[in-house]
Amino acid sequence: MQRRTYDVVVVGAGIVGCATAYHLARAGQRVALLDRSGVAAEASDAGAGMLTPLAEAGASDLNDPLLRLGLAGLRHYEALEAQLESEAGLWAGLVHLPTLYPAFDDGQAEALRRDLAALQTLRPELRWLEADEVRQREPLLSPSVRGAVFSPAEGNVAIGHLTRLLARASVLNGAELLAPRSALSLLWDGARVRGVLTEVEPIEAAHVVLATGAWSSAWHAQGECAAIVYPLKGQLLALRTSGQPLRHTIYAGPLGYLVPKADGSVFVGATSERRGFDKTPTAGGLAHLLTVVHRVAPALEEAAVDRTWAGLRPVSADGLPFIGPAPSSPGLWLAVGHGRIGAITGPVTGFIIAELIQGRPVPYDLDLRPFAPERLGPWRRRLTALNAAEAAQRQPELFSQAPTQAEAAAEDQRRERS
Image 1 (cartoon, one colour):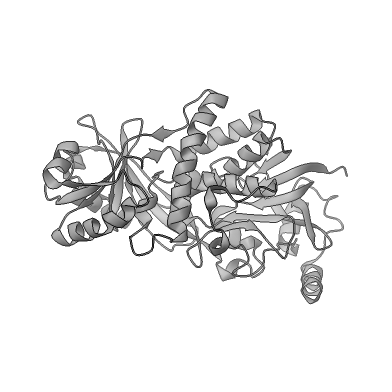
Image 2 (tube, rainbow, N blue to C red):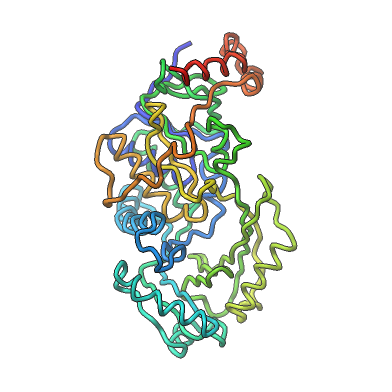
């Protein structure tokens, strides 16, 4: 059987995978982009799309790796938006409304003001607004607001729209989109990764990028039970009002957030639940989101409920994403585990991977050591008896000589000894 051959195969067509494919294809690489369901089929079409790296930061450690990655992501969006809109002739999905970090009691106000001076060393445009000015700027906020940090550069994005646009721009630049198409295992040439096996055919490539979201643990040597990357359920609510619009993205600490979108709706989020791969909205989740509305912007209690939904954030076991090459498996690259900050860090991660594959230095002077792909063990998914049996129902001739699970395990042991 003739095998397809590419420079790079990207497994996963969420925001990270589509950004990776876009930057590589734009640089002239032959790219295949695979996804078992389709473009933006999971978390990348479920999140609120906040571009707020400071939401995850305090001033205790300005060198926090997630903060640094998020700030690089904010810089990357500045170039990406103009680039995409020029190439594709379409809106990139960004909503350029500023963000407010409000305080609703004296303790919150004191903490925000204490952190502000340090954060201004990273983003000098940040400033403190007293309560009267906050109410003037954002009349929908609760009258109990005591002040807020004003961040003019942190907006939000229609993350599903952007993901689909990146996929489209990838194809315009020569990438091939193969979806729905499942990657079942890695292909190997000795100790080197040489592509992926799909249920349709083998696909050979010099580089394989895993951008597999909440399902990434299946590719880890320890398997799914280790939960190296696990799904964290987040329920959201969309409101629609015919009255005064919300003028800012509102990040209200651990309580929740309100995100005004380009179509006039307001996204309210979000819960954080360990519920496996269940994405069912619940009464309890809705009650929590309505509490956010009541406490942060009670004027929105008159808004109509447009819809409720849930997504699965891909969270790593230690809270940091895996970004870069896998040392024990040459040819394999990881871009997974971005958790709650995939909207701000997804596109820049794709750019980082693309630059590294082309032999260029890490952009934005980032230190990738905290994101080392094998800090929790190697990644080396091989064909198992289970997924071979599933695929063989569609392509029996391809899998007639497939290794059994015992053979695959024996080969793993041999490689570890060598």
